[in-house]
Image 1 (cartoon, helix red, strand yellow):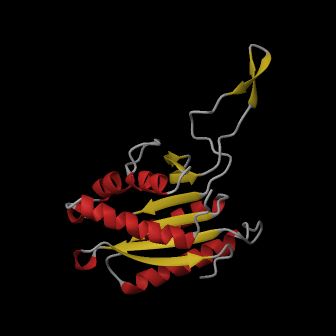
Image 2 (cartoon, rainbow, N blue to C red):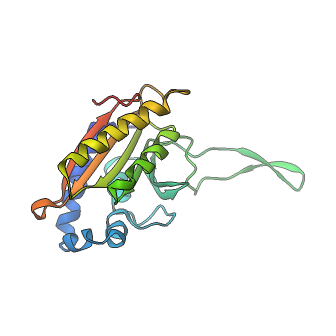
Length: 202
């Protein structure tokens, strides 16, 4: 099993986006519509372990990695872990065990990914990521307007992560990754910010 850290995720994300724009020549048109972009880029807003271009790319690249869209409140969840096993329940007053073999109930997440097309709302997804336990938490958003907006987003992430640690600290191995996209010069461009478990930039 490979631990996918922020650096590995970044290189894989760049590889995925290059593949996506090559295979979808209409991507610039899709980019102008939040709904169309989410549908094509992420796979839509439905709970499923199929039909996510991002999910499929990462699952194909990393052996044993599974994914599910809209898992709980997260846009995309990845896990190398097995499902929970032998969970007792009462069946006609006798104790039996749930069979979760063909479902997505991993005992832990490896990557949680949130995508927020509107960067002014990104802070809401940032807070959501701090609530969960996971080695790598990723937020993707987009900014085509102001260059100082990227710095504001990075500062927001630092502030939110730091405050989330006030009463109950995150695991020190946890990494956060902020990915900001734009379509300047008719290219799909990305800016990356990495943070440690305390919100410090790496």
